[in-house]
Structures are given as structure tokens and as C-alpha cells.
Length: 471
Image (cartoon, rainbow, N blue to C red; front, side):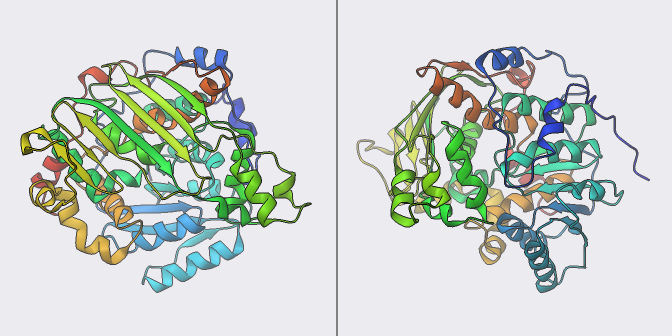
């Protein structure tokens, strides 16, 4: 029988008692005040357990999986888990009947063994966590459940792989850090964009010094999602729309920010220092509701407070700057920006383009990526590209992420994203909310690594791939 890990003292966890009582799809107004954040930023400087920086878990030949949430995101991940060697789905928890039925169909379609289902209410997942035949839990639920479920999983001796964002408040960020350290269970936020072809290629370019010393990055989640407001009883918009009614913040920062943070070695030689944030007026969703719904509809009765465009600016300890934008309301093309500027050149996406001093004419964008792919395509992408294209999942990046996760756990390699990354990247939302409410004045990032960041080695996916050609 699996040895029980040390549990976190829950006497200070009043928040969790409240959060656990909230049904999926509903949420707390989990906004820390400025004074609370200042207090939380000064959290203990020493970990109660061991640091999870570059943590290597005991090798798992087969990763036995429990999945919480079988909705839209859960369906995608379930299908991919069945396509990757090393995963075995043991159990699935979801109280929504149609989602559970769909999950059964996915298992059957992919030739996966039948799993045990936990469908008796919002907290039946806790019964799943009592099993001794689960190594890792995937949390694929609405945002308000991410931190409580990840904490429950780690306390039950399971690695927690959590959808974005991992946390909604600074306190939740610290809860994840403390629980991961005390249980020595991994807590990884599944930021799939870090595994896109271009993002991995640029990571190689940065490591090879092509762009020189890094100075500035630009990240975004600009994705028109007003149509999700038509999800009323179920679906992503049924719960996600509500956040536009109660937080004026950068609600979803990590898709654009994650790759930029990895280029800049955030938490591994540099870290986020402080943030300032401003939002535009919140107009677009009210206008959309008036156009698309009856006058007495709940969407017209709501009042949307989240500015249509939020722009947050982060300064790192080493003086670099990062712009992070959020806009899921205005009519404009999708972009994550993914711009990284160094002393020797710049790369940006949407469309892909590069200008490098050593290549000659840096006054004009070079749009043909052929030679750059030939020189800097990442070993991870090259190893998985064919299977990723067949499996799908956000252009293959979901498949690559899960394949890499299995690779790390089966080969004694530290995960590419640890709990400190999950906390730092997620912290943008509550800090931007506070800055917005305070005329854009800056808010400090806590040092979630507790001083470990200056001596931590940069992320090195390439060499770990080349050293172990096969899982």
C-alpha cells in the first residue's frame, strides 16, 4: 500500500471550507485586499518541507490517472491520454451525467479499459482520491475548483496537473506552494502553449543567443469569446461569463505569459518583481447582450465590470519588462503576441516574423520561417510532431505537453513547469485587479520560491530529450 504523505495543517484553511461548498460553475468573490496581499507576500521564508525546484519524483513506468472533470476540456485530455504510451486512466469524477456518459464513449472509442466513475455530487472526487491505484490527478474543472482540488489531490499522495489558471488569489497561490512542498507531490499548471512549435523553437533560439540579451516580452490572450455568453445552463460560458461581472482584472494571463517567462528564465535566474495594470471601459459584453438576448434575459440584467482590454506591465528583478494583455470581448483576430526582444533581434507571432541583426537587414520583418525551423526546431517537437498532428488538441500542443509530462515522470526528469511557475503566472490576475483598483499603482509579486530563484538552473528541455531518445 502507498505510504501516506504528510498532510498540510488545515487549521488556517478557512478559505477551503468555503470554496469546497461552492458548486462547480459558481465561485467565490475571491479578491484579496491590498493589505491582505502585503501580508501574504511576507509568507514564511523557509519551506516547511523540501523545495520543489528541480524536484525529481520516483520513476513511474505506468502513470495511473484519475481525471476530475469530463466536460469540453476533459474530453480533449481524455482522448489524448489514450493515445500516449504510459498513461492508464483508472477513474473519472464528474457529477454531470452527460459529461460522464461522453467520457465513457471516449474510453470505448480509443480502446481504453473501462474506468471507475464517481458521479455522486460535486465532492465525490474525494472518494476517488482515496484510491491507492492512482499516481496523478488531472484537474479539468471550472477555475474556482482548481486550487481546492489540487490541494486535495496532493494531500492524498497524488501529483496534481491543473488546468489554467492554477489559482485565483495570492493566498491560493501560497496554498499550492505550501502543499506541494510539504507533500513532495508535483503541482503543474498545464500551460499547453509552452509546447507549441514556435514557442519551443524560440526557446532554442533564445538559449543559443540568437536574440542576444533579453530585454522585453509581450504576451496576450486576445480571443473573442462573447459567443460563450450563450452557454447558460452548462458549458464554459455558463461559469466563465460570471467572472466578467465581478473582477476587473487580467482574467486569463498564462497562455501568452508562460512562454515569455520560460524564455526569460523566470524563477530560474530572474523573477517577477512588480506589476502595474489598467483596463479600458467594460462596454462590449453589455452591447452584445443587448443585441443577442431578450431585454429581460439574465445576460442583460448583469453588469459587466471587467474592462474589455486589460494591459498589465511586469518588471522583473533583472529589469526586464513584459506586457500582458487580456481581451475576450472585442471583435478582432486571435493573438497571443509571443514577442520577445533582445539586444540582437526580435521574434513575434501572428503572423510569425523575425528580425535579427546578425542576419543583415533587421529593419524589415522576415516572414519565411523555413530556415529557422531547419536550424532551431526543437527536439521535443520533432520527436512528437507526427503523432501530435494525428491526435490534435490545439494544433498538437496538448499532445506534446502530455507526452512530455509522461516522459519526465518515466525518466526521472524534473517537470518543465513546477508549482512556483503555477503560482507566479497565476498571480497576475489578483495583482492586476488590485492595481486596477488603485489607479494603476504597482503591486509586488511574492517570491514563491522563497529565495531559491537566483541559483536555479534554466529550463533545459532540449538536452533532456537528446539524452533519452525514447520513453
